[in-house]
Amino acid sequence: MRLSIPSLLSLLGVLLVVPTADAVPDRQRPTVVAGTQAALSLRADGYAVSVEGRGNQVSLTVTRGPSAASYLTRGNASPGGIRARLGRFGRIAVRFKPSGRVSRRKPPRGCDGKPSIVRSGVFVGTIRFRGEDGYVSIDARRAKGRSTTLRRWRCGTRGRERARISARLKRAGFEEAKLEATTPNDRVSFLASGLHVKDGPSLIFFAASTTERRGSVRIARFVFRISGKGRTFSFSRSPRAATVRPPKPFHGSAEFGADGGTPSWTGNLSVSLPGAKLDLTGPVFKAKLIQPKSTKESFGLRGQPLPLDFHHLVAP
Image 1: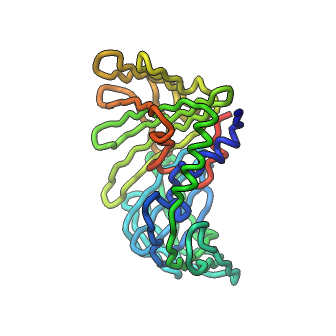
Image 2: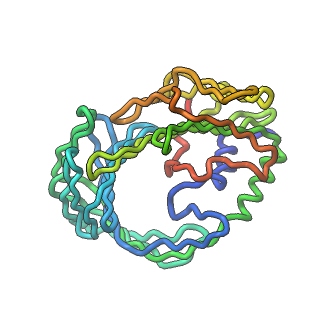
Image 3: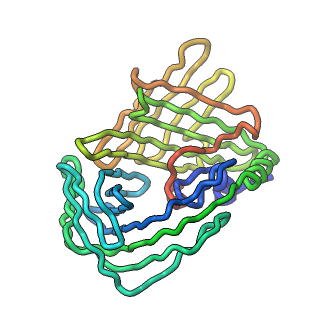
């Protein structure tokens, strides 16, 4: 069986956990909590910027390509607007003006409930933000957005669908491995997850993230990239070793080795993220290479935060 990259993306879609209502963990029946949400978007200094609020949680996310930085703080969000102070980074104080356009979002497949009500319009007021060292600066008075009244949805499971996909991948013949490198408390983490299909393409997922707190603001920076080139993540069982050469915005390479001793993780691998540049190797990192022996042990990228639309992140 020969699989193309789009086919693999489609097959693996149900094996990946995406942080939305559409993603439902096996053996669970979660309920999406009813509430209201307000969201606006704009562009500044080459970045896409979004502000989202739900209840007392407000986040401002700066995105460019596959990289993003999200600034989370306590505030107030309602159908009428968003208010929050982002410490030394700025503040949000906007009210929502509906345009009159109203749409309904139906529950995702596998979920039951009434449609959510989505109102389009503009937010007016103060949108002020300045990132670290001024990498992005925003001083806006209005931005397009939407106000959403979420309904309570009851969702089922997708275990059977995952089992069918796993069986198809097993028939295709593949080898996979996952390499993780983290600092204490997972403050900085790097992940490479590779799938090499016999007589077909490779599918490699790279992710890196870091978290920190600045006063009342929690900051999470992350990047997610997909590559179809097997040489970007090569690995072997005997000796247990791996080499990673991720595409941009990663830089450099790193090597993992565990041949009869303490695992080593060396190289000059780093990544550029909005507001920061991270070194991804060094003595503070603890690395491990996992290679499942069967499809039943297949891990994909479960539990990893993935973007909603990752097809455009495939590296050229």
